[in-house]
Every structure is written in structure tokens, then in C-alpha cells.
Length: 152
Image (cartoon, one colour):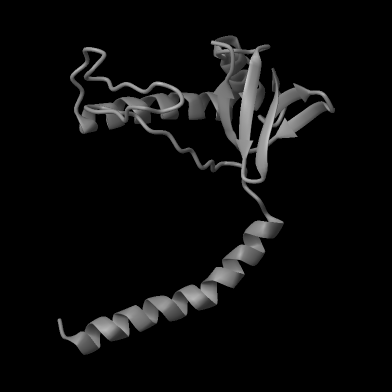
């Protein structure tokens, strides 16, 4: 493939993206589908960072030898199971299951936000899955942040 062909392909992709992105955005803004979720997590398979505020470990250090492929398959299988449960029974069933397993519910936590930190009591999740934090000002709803348990 020549540089000219690569350039034409790139130009085509850019133009299609420029034309369709506003159209798709306009449509999805008016017809939202609550079937997507951005999830971030880290699982240390072999090594882990030291000297952190909260200790980390790896699956290998815990005695488990797991390949990336096996871990990905297991995580994907569990996500699919919970996704199917959500679609069949709604978010309330996931919320109930999550709260039954939540570590530190009712305990003191620190919430790190982009704008600073908050301290308070982990009061649960609301019906939309937003963290409930009770602090000196009352009950707050925290949609995104890093959560750290205190007093453990």
C-alpha cells in the first residue's frame, strides 16, 4: 500500500467521523440507552507496587498462578452473569447484592474527588448507584471518586 492510499484511507475515516459524530451524538442525547457502563479496575497478577497508602498484593503473592487469558475469561463470565441479572431484574437486584457484600458499610471513609477530599460515613448506595456519604453537612451523593476506608 502506498503512502497516498494510506492518506486517502485516513482522510476518509476522519471525514466520516466528522460527519457522523454530531449526528450520532444528537440522536443518543435524545434517545439514551442505559446499557453501557465504564468500569475501571486493576488486578495485579504477578507483581504489585509497594509503599502505597493502602497495601497492595498480587494473585501470585497470594498463591494463585493465573494467566491473563484465564483471568479475562473469568472476569468476562462474571460480568455477563451480572449484566444478564441487571437486564432481567433491574438495577435494584444488583444494588441489593452489592450492599450485602459491601466492605465497610456504615464505617468511616475518605472520598478523593478532583476538587478535594471528603470525610464521612459510608451510608450506602442510592437507587441510581450513587454513593451516599454522611458528613457534618448532612447526606451527600457522590457519583465519582476514589474511596478509602478509615480506621482499619
